[in-house]
Image (tube, rainbow, N blue to C red):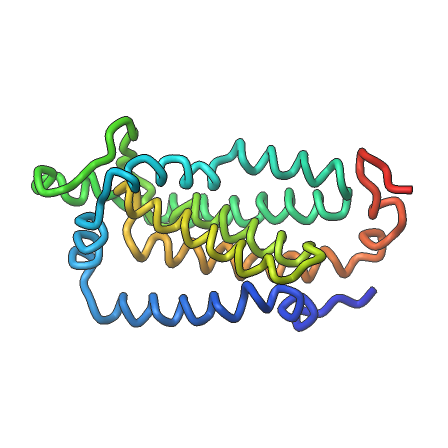
Length: 219
């Protein structure tokens, strides 16, 4: 099977087209407002509901969620599980490289003289460095791309996008990252996964009957 990048983009179109619109809006916001203005605009929008929901939503970008989702896919299809696991690995390596190049301070360090002005969610352990880019956001968008690609119902692509955006916003809401951190994370997660899926799913073995099966074998 000859899988081209245009084939991948077509399959994830209900994720990718809205994502491009959101990305353009984010870039406009970034060049219009300062880091401080964006941060405090988000931080002042806290609610009791948000303080309860976002710590759970942000967990969708955690490593154990990656493992759980991969194991579920392994039961359904070896091909889908391999696409998911390797996409996580590739995007994860990329984000760690960038993080250690920049070693950027997180909000709790960046605003250490203004902490009294910031709303922090109780019970959340604040990270100090490696802010840029957001690893949780990379994971969420990488997963969203793969799930949009392998889902039978392509309409789910938009839902996966909303969940990924929710994870990205949660990182800002919880004061773990800045706006540019999550924007860059979405770019790394989305485009590295699109390129990797195009490369890997172009391999002949990926479309054999054996790889279409999972641990719960299909008849």
